[in-house]
Image (cartoon, rainbow, N blue to C red; front, top):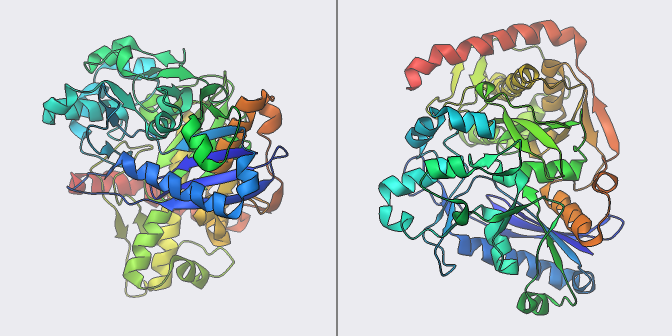
Length: 484
């Protein structure tokens, strides 16, 4: 048996698979986010441990024999979080999360240093790890002085599991300290933030062994013998391993809290000015490009709270057949935007409202706004040298056939819906655990799921969708002066 642990923002998921990659079962432990100030987003790492213990206890209660047969564990986690550890292995302050924007000024200053884009292949975003450490140095100097190690969230979980300070390439590529092409820490960029390589965990590939489960945990969980912990992956790269999006030309669109358009690459293709992320993949000698929007299902859930109906009720009011855009346009910038604008201050808006704009029209505009934000990502990926001929849809929003038809029509490519199953980050992590424990060929393990259904673009609406996308594109420069 092989175990995938996915440390998300809202919970930890533990998923068991057998040697044939059949999902045996899963369990969860819940997490909350603390927002002590405007723009702040934090979690206590102790809560990650507690949530993991809850998830493992859930598996042990339902599948004790299967859990006891685990030989490999893979880790996946929310990226970019700054978890600060002192020389004694103690946590110095709550972890600053991926969606925390307090370090926007520090990020802009680092990004103005041309070395960062040149070496990492990416803009220094406020959510990335390096600017957070500069913020701590500027605002909490007594804490910064005690920092012995900086860990990403899943790698703090690894420290608890194995006692080792180890990370891997895909997650580390989101720190602004990795030489992404060479797949190693940049001592030059670390020095630019008053840190050194000794502050960083050692680096392995996501498929490599990266520690062994501590005896006391193995005993508590009912495991015996050597249990290998794999390098693992950042959440999006782990989802890609779960989806089999590991070879050139494969792509997926994720409609979760945030939205992602992810394409696997056989070579390193940076284009930071487009705000496309060019990161290492979890498999050796593989990279990926990724466009990220900060509010996908989050936008629909926000509107659902105002409309007083659930997201699924709102979506079902639109029916199954895609409608032409109504002229109401929604910008989904509720917490700023990453790709292609790199703008933490921009905020969302509706435009084109009239007396005829009912709840249904606004729901349609919200879905289209997210669709067009993903189309922005496609254009950015194209400009960085990636072509996409079809995408696989994952995430909670992919349950809406209407939304998928909207995305297919705007992107101009078919959208594949995978057959029923769990192909997310926890499954990808479990696959990495299997590879690390057995030495199996990563490409033979990380295969693509069967396709249950394909949503084709609605050709009759492509013209009206292009017009609506042009309106959407004109909205950002119009509202930017009002948001800043």
